[in-house]
Amino acid sequence: MKTYTAIIEKCKDTGLYVGYIPGIKGAHSQGETVDELIENLKEVLKLLEEDGALEPESEFVGVQNIVA
Image 1 (tube, rainbow, N blue to C red):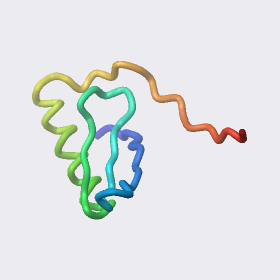
Image 2 (tube, rainbow, N blue to C red):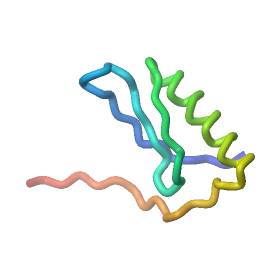
Image 3 (cartoon, rainbow, N blue to C red):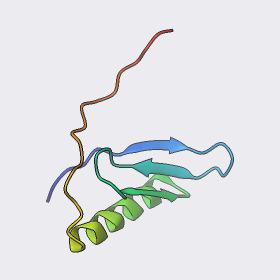
């Protein structure tokens, strides 16, 4: 089992949680709750793995706060 980092935001317009996994093309989803979003992302990862498309396009480095 592999661990992935997901970026999660809440859409102001729909109220849905949206998320993606940096570096993995097509690894994005949404859900009414964070738990639903995580389950949806797991399903996406499973489908991408079955298609052989789970190879990262880039390496996730991290997040940084910027004061401007």
